[in-house]
Length: 267
Image (cartoon, rainbow, N blue to C red; front, top):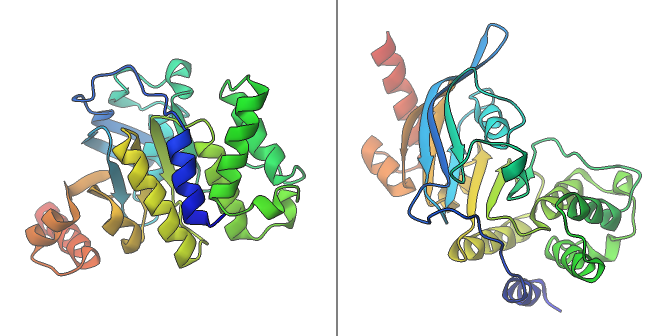
């Protein structure tokens, strides 16, 4: 079956488990969040809101604080100051099963097969029905176009393929809130386009996706963006709003405009 046709079948057959929060309320609320690694400020009074059911991009250079922010939101680390609400609650084990998280560095078991890895994460996310779990695992692996390699150990896969397996692990339980840290690194253009079609359909079904990236291709696909630099949000809005606000033709030039404006105002 062609990948796009399978994608449509998969989406129609899946029931997204939605969070018990009002859709009018933001899925994520961050107010004056600060976090340090020793003397290094990773988050410096950062504030933003992410509406429900959109793809929200965190765009900035390496070291801007994007990954730290995602780790805070999924509950891996706690801010030193500020308030964080995810799906209306503070990040905790109570909200963990409602999230999918694809880290920048994959957390796969190299000696296990592709299918064993995805099945392991399905079990972690409380998918106890053997038949349902097997169906979801197969759908996730077919979506990333690795079904022919399902029995291969992850150690035998290329870096890009491992990235795809990591994505399958994040989406296997159909979470209402999905965090993707540099999700398209190592993907070919055709598969990247397929993923974005999938993300858009998830948005239409009410799923909120937060994407950390430093590539403009990812940014252009997002409904809203937050430009992040030195642990702060320096601008946010839709891609068109940010380009117009900076009077620039590209998001890359818009980011540079806002970054330089902030430096001049801080001088």
